[in-house]
Length: 285
Image 1 (cartoon, rainbow, N blue to C red):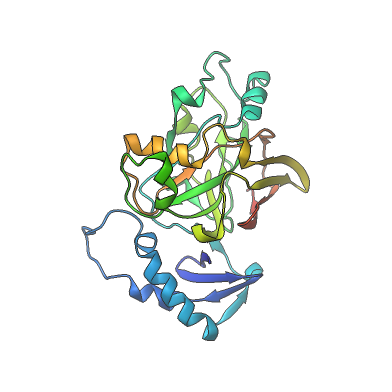
Image 2: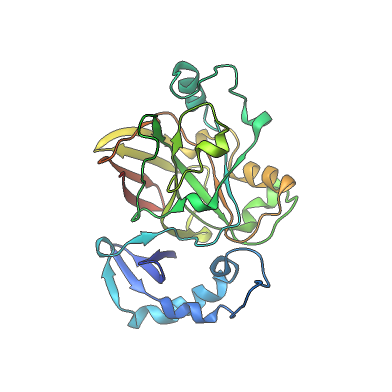
């Protein structure tokens, strides 16, 4: 099942190029007042019940062409956005060769040493909202990544059981302003964490470690790879992150980007696609 959040507050079920409005399925989520009794994104925490209700509502749901709605991040309230740096060897190679990517060539650490970093949740947007490029005198790059959405609480989970805690998968654009600041700062600018176009539930993806991914900038292919080239695969990332954090429903792990990262400018359009998930168009302002 593919579930999207559109026009800010609506829940949609995506079938081909059509969005079915199944917002009424949200009624199965228990009501709550501050402070929330459960940690994590409420939709993802109650995803199984929501999906059952969606299945009942689809036949009579109002429909919209996907091009007629504004797609927001399918996860509204994650507690953590976790990024995996230099998780493709091809990206390490290009970073070492391009001073514009890494200002200090001595700081490229393998993922076995650096593991992951956090991005501010305030940087999260959907493809329909687009990227607003900040720091016009500095380079901002696109980085397309498979994004994993956690479905249940997990701490210290073994690699062999890691996929059991996955709710689904989506696409992530880890936008990055280049400079000397800490990675978490430069990747947490408002709108620099794009997620979308929807959540593809885990049952639809047989192997997250064998998915083609491609990014076009203004129609020109810039990134073209497959997740089988990940240094730390999806299970390893989940397991290792869970050694440090309690992973909560709705938490997102950006799994890293392959070679081909490059600068964007206002007016550019990023067309992204990942096998089994779909495609999204993201404007740069």
